[in-house]
Image (cartoon, rainbow, N blue to C red):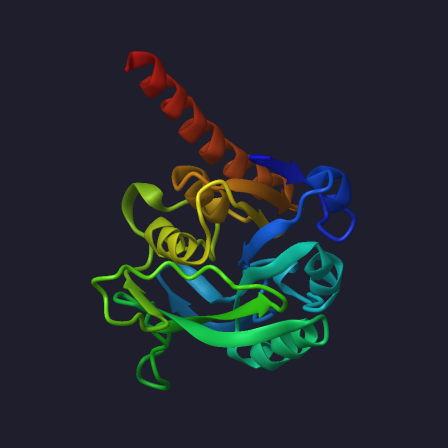
Length: 239
């Protein structure tokens, strides 16, 4: 637990890692399969080409592998492109999950991609599903009448930004983890990227299992986690 593995999630031995336990949640941000080149240049980036890892990605294989290891009542939250939503939902439903909602991340500072020729997209989506058979976790504060399935935060800026092109804000992921999991729950992220989901799990007293295939992103995520763990240890000693 609380470790990042440099491995292909399809080949990873999750059963050995869990050692008889089950996952309380999967929260992940897999490749969107949207990379392509175009002539538009914005903020120094040409086109929308994140790398080979975002091309020809199979959206179903990882679901089939990990769904059996989610406990009854466990939640799965998957960030995805609009055109992937149906495939992800159908695949999970075939594995005894129920679709609950589509979560929207509303960006207060979206990247303007050729605003004279198209709409500026200021939303990313995630689907929320629950494994049948037990009550699921949904931590709504009593003073709040209801929660909308949307979170409004800016895109990354300042010290939080890393070299990963599709990094999610720590505040966004922390809110999702707080609502859909409890302390000491086990959270899996098989596509760790910059490590934000693992980091948010650690900060919010959840256990995590994180997997990243790309060596450079594995090192990036590992360094972020180790920095947080060291600072927690230092503060504990000082106290």
